[in-house]
Amino acid sequence: VPLPPPQPSYNSNPISAPFPPPQPNYNYHLGEAPSQPTVYGTYQNTGHASEVGRVHFPSYKEKSLVEAYLLAISPFGVLGAHHFYLNRYYWGIIYFFTLGLLGCGYIIDWFRIPCLVRQANDKIRNPEKDQKTISDAYVMWFPLGLLGFHHYYLGNYALGVLYTCTLGLFGIGWIIDAFRMPCLVRSANERRNLAQVEKKSVCLALALGISPLGVLGAHHYYLNRPEWGLAYTFTGGLLGIGWVADWFRMPVLIKRANKVSSGERSNNVKTVDDAYILWFPFGLLGFHHFYLRRPVWGFVYFFTLGIVGLGWLIDICRIPWLVKETNLKIQAGQERRPLIVSSSTDQVKEIPTDSIAGTAYAQGYQNYNTDNQVATAPTSWQHPSTMGAFGQNYQQGGYEYPRNGSLQFSPPINNMQPPPYQREDPSHVYHQSDDLVKN
Image (cartoon, rainbow, N blue to C red; front, side, top):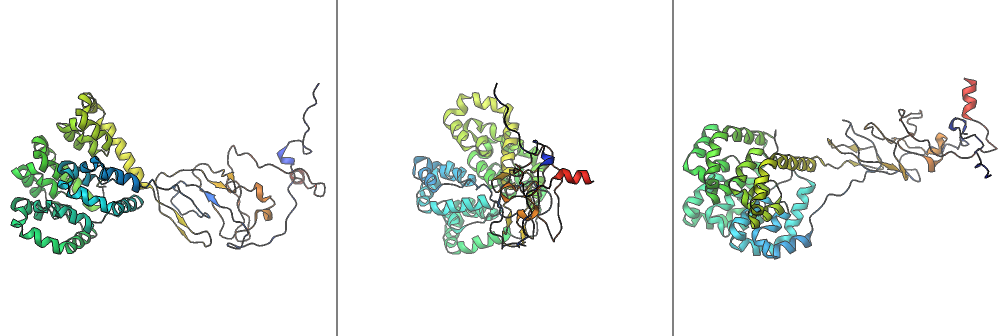
């Protein structure tokens, strides 16, 4: 008969386990400790700043210079594939319909791909940073500046329409703009940074939308929807269908434009009505997929006529779901914010987030942190051995360091396994059970 396994001397009862012998208090201070715990992970937002040693967030998925070059040099670069890859959908659509700005922009991009990749990665880190650049303005100016493309890019829609109707003021204004382009770009960026909000006029938007200029997308240019304006310009108001539909939804478009101008609404939010207008009649070419930031599917539909029409018909039922999925991805990208803290000072900088979750670790042990509680670290650090616990068994989420000379206890945590206990030291026979007997 096999013998039973040996039992620990404290009868496997955690309450009878001995405390380790008390250690001398070295009175370590913040920044002087030999090894301060490092916390890895992300935390739920609790409305207040959390104090942690060092927080390491997963890096953002940045764009690759090699992949951008491959797309730009390939024949797909004429259709703006590299711009779609770099999340420059506005430029991708322009290249798609103008064959890379008649080939000129396609060739120029070979030399400025590193700059474009750097700008795209900067925008991924800081979505709010969206400034006009001189290089983009000059690429728009030549050769399609005669049609006012650079003015549309810079937000000068009135001048853009004037240049379109007069071929760049008969070429004179186009030549002058070559020398004053830096001033135009600077003025455009200053306008974007102004605090005051200019609301769009309902009467003017209706006048532009109902007039023949609406076929060319004049009302979309006025409402700061240049992508839609260009789509209407090159497709005749989506073959007139989008132009007529806009007569009935003009109040909604104006309301959205004013909310975007006042900052109450993001300009990146996609809507179901926009997607359906692009689905019919140009959904066979994948227009609605390009709008929903699905360029791969857009190209598939373009070369297969909506996967022989079947995918186009199926999309009529799943467009609301596609719009919701795209908006969730956009929202998730905007909510990611780094939490910057200092490991040697008490300075904590908090950038609130809505749904950031993760798992924290301290000294190689999982952080027992539940119910969205944020694990805290002390402002005045002492070695864990001064608390009567071994350093290798110390766990950030279960126990806290003393602050200001007083003991701080964490709230009880359900289903938390205790740390492994040391065997009883004969030289130290004090037990927790003695405490209970005395009480």
